[in-house]
Amino acid sequence: MTYKIKTIDTSNVQLTEDILELTELLAKNVHEHWASQRLSEGWNYGASRNDQRKETPVLVPFEQLPESEKEYDRKTAMETLKAIIALGYSIEKI
Image 1: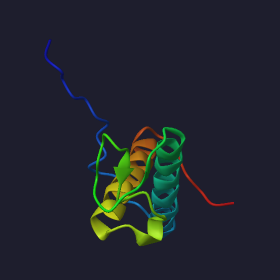
Image 2: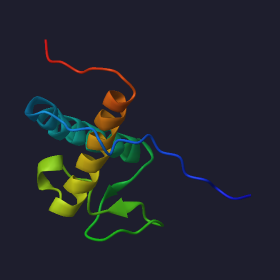
Image 3: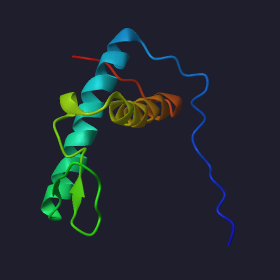
Image 4: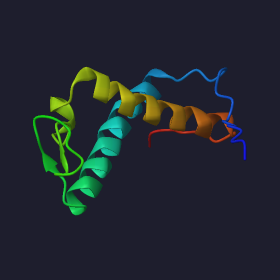
């Protein structure tokens, strides 16, 4: 079986400043959900990742993450927002 990746084309979507601010809030929320799931699975903070002992150095608050980890969460949030807009939905703060 060949896996054919088919993503929503978001190449023409430009995000407004308000939506870019939302991206940061969603990125933090993405991390919080990930951390909650890991904790429920018995994971703990560790200086280095160890799958057998269920330890990871990124089980910390979003603000304490290395910038590379924050950027991963930001990209996830941003692509989700772009996909919503590309599908014809609008996002507005009320």
